[in-house]
Length: 475
Ligand code: UD1
Ligand code: MG
Image 1 (spheres, rainbow, N blue to C red):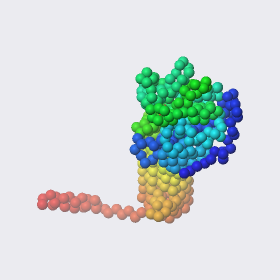
Image 2: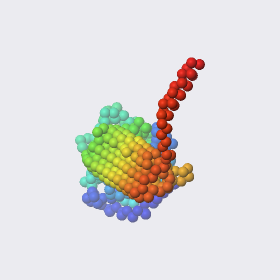
Image 3: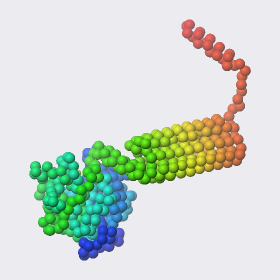
Image 4: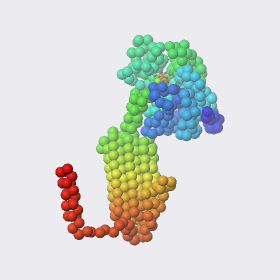
């Protein structure tokens, strides 16, 4: 079991009265619940590690919490605890891990992180590891409310289909209670204002509120939502803020995972469009969580971005291209139908055409690989031109070897470059050559059988073949 202690983090203890500190100065602990089993995912992988845009959904939640600022993160694990803890450790080594050994409700889960909470924070925000679309701004708004004197702020949403959610029972602006579906009366069930599950607490009160929660309800669980009624009875300031329903979507099965992925993709594409990226059919473009695309670029339909891709200003990625681990330089052009694999770097104005695959390939400024080629483990100098169908023979069954093509070199159509090999600056290779020896600068390398023309032989060959065919059809 991976475990880190809170004392290592050097987080200052909470001052006795944090109520009038400005929001920016308030310390914050985010407690992320990730102990659930996720049976409906039908998966060997823990639910919270299923990726959205290539990043585990739990890491999206950690990322949002980091961006919202103010502090520390505690993750409550249970099901497949070691695996979840390891993923958290990779992404956010400062987050602390707390194990909930029995699943006894959301209040019980938050209290698994008691050690972290006891360090003392102005704000304690409870998030779910399976609700990955929650926005940084929403968390900031909730914390602003705490800074303004609220003690409990619940994130609620309006929905046409409230079944299964806790209902927010209000009187005017005041939040009085949250009633879980299974404990609600028919009248309470008709309420459409629901609990997203996300609650921000004043750090000063959070432990005493959670400790007061009991489990005398339909599910026999300790509900974090009961803190609302307890807080109201104690005269604390309790309120709800409304967030869009889609921001609070939880993932229980792969249908919901696909919905969340679609929403994430749409959000990010819209952000790119607003920042100056043109997409004719945005819905067909698939982004990765770390895709970077600068302004005045064009992304044609059906382009897929894998991890670690950046596209510089002015570049065009044409239809049906697949990029992963690639840096596309300014004004470069890729595709249609190109596959750029990890380690590909395209210089300014470089051009990669259709049915071209590259891997660990540096393609210099203005160089062109326009048609039907494979270039792996290679450096191509500026303005070199690679003819159609040319291939690097980079793998001998045991190791990978390097091919270097000098600046301004011209590689003839259907050249095989048997690595390790280099072609010098401004050198040429003749079409169809198998180049296995280095070519000096400015040389022309020809490696192919000499052509022989047999006078009139095409005619005799045709007649011979025709006669043979006729003889066969008569038998
Ligand atoms: C909870 C809320 C409900 C809200 C709904 C929103 C409570 C009592 N109810 O209900 O008001 O409308 O979320 O989706 O809080 N978890 C643990 N350990 C536990 C229990 C839960 O880690 O012992 C985690 C789960 O993995 C999940 C989250 O907490 O990520 C919520 O638990 P879940 O069982 O889905 O709660 P709901 O019944 O949906
Ligand atoms: Mg739920």
